[in-house]
Amino acid sequence: MEFDLVRPRELSAARLEHWAELQSQDIALDSPYLSPGWARAVEAAQQPADHVRVVVVRKNGRDVGYMPARIGALTAMPAGAPMCDYQALVAEPGVEVSPRQLVQALGVQRFDFSHWIEGVAPFSDCARGRDLSHAVDVSGGYAAYEAERKAAGVGVLKDCDRKRRKAEREAGPVVFTAYSRSEAAFERLIELKRVQYRATGQTDIFEAGWTLRLLRDLFDSRNPDFGSMLSTLHIGEQLAAVQMNLRGRHTVHAWIIAHDPALERFSPGILLFQSILRWMDETPHHRLDLGPGDYRFKRELANAGQWVTHGTAGVPSPALLVRQAAYDVRGAVEALPLGRVCALPGKAMRRMDRLRALR
Image (cartoon, rainbow, N blue to C red; front, side, top):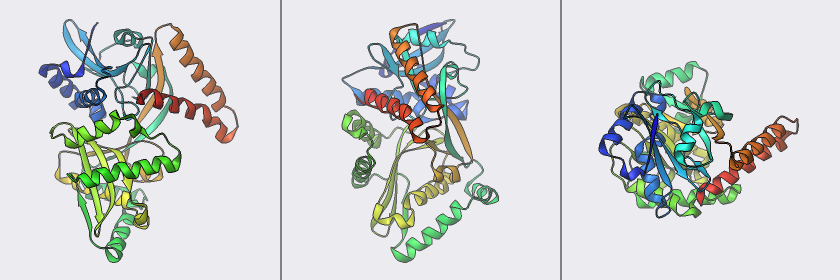
């Protein structure tokens, strides 16, 4: 097995086409985060830092797999972290690569992953934990999906219909726009998310600069195969909810989401999800990925899912030993009967990783 390490912007048209072809063969790999478009968009947004590279796996002189990463002095992480909800090696079936080989190809001591698709070689064997990423499959159409949710005893869509009628009675027409080009709606999304970050004590990811450039570039993009989709829901004259989603060939991935707290009683965020699912009947998209996170609305909307893992892999080195020790401490504390205290090491590791990625 051989490896090339190239900049995303230097990928040839043949490599871009082959990468996209490999994605199309498996719906689990259809995520926009796993596409060459994501790697190229992140690279452009993070310039002049210029740390994003793609490992191209080659066998007998032929390309057989692709994996982007952001490379530091000693360690690497997924390209676009912490805004990247899926990571995987997009490769031909049967390609066998060891974790050590890929890390060596990156030229670092350690690769830290946070949402590696479970079951995809080679890093699944290095996992130290897993989370469920929820999704909605509407390949049979919205009506069939709605009937399936009803048969499963889930009333979220019925509640949506009731809230929609309530909103129309009390505040005015409910209007959905799939591809909004409204600058005001885009700016309002960023404003609402920053308010939310401050209110909940979370890291404001938009302070990094490159994250805002990434969203702006994707909002302005007209690439038919990869890009963003700013969707809005107005109730009367007011912008009630807005989502910046990513789109692949058949998948829409819910990404940056916000709603107007003044209209909370109408559940505008859920209404917007329902509107997107209905709209997908008229498009090539048949999967709405809700991403990781254990929220009630995700559990109720979802009829499919994908396990993702977090962990680390590397070559024998101080950097790998430090990370493994951190995971050992985390695992020991999580095994103790200490309630919420058990979650503190994991939260600390995620926060540190987020700050590393945003630099």
